[in-house]
Image (cartoon, rainbow, N blue to C red; front, side, top):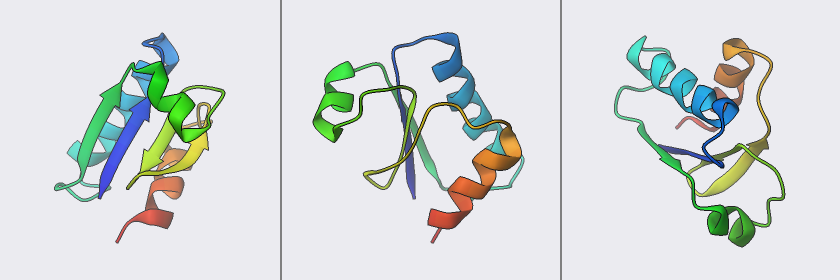
Length: 82
């Protein structure tokens, strides 16, 4: 699985990326999950997303904006985990 956060580099975008890394480090998501962060706004435009941060799993936008907490984020990720 490949998870990507796309945002402007704001504290919220960075926090979302850090939460995902933490979930992987804690073993709550697969340790082999590739996690990436991009500040390329053109990527958002190409995906048709008008907000940030965008959460992209395996090339599909699965969320825009910040989940309320790590538990909600984990639930989102688990829906797409293979």
